[in-house]
Length: 152
Image (cartoon, rainbow, N blue to C red; front, side, top):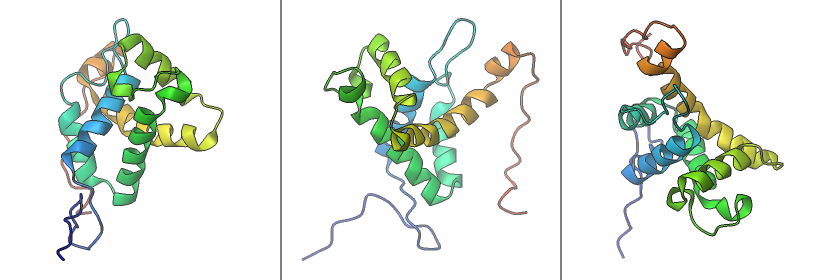
């Protein structure tokens, strides 16, 4: 009997890296719903979200990435509790998805709120680094990351 391959790769230190591209898509789609464009402000899905999620996955500790993925799963699987529609969040209409995002982020259950908070962490980082968002707040664009934090 052969073992089935795991849905994640192991890093050099043997820790699961959770590198399945479907997980990237799950996180990305949840963030696009949680951070939509409003008025003059662009949403998080303004062009660089795929690259940001891939980089975040690559550079983050595996336990944080696991929390973000679990938060995305909670987000996508709970519309039946918030808007009473038995569909995953990525299949909801924009109006229902927005209502779901608002209700799930303010859930009375602490663990659900925390799962969504962990999911929103990289979304806020991506949104706040977007030059179009920074321009709306009269901030200069962020400098390119030198990528040295792991070497210092």
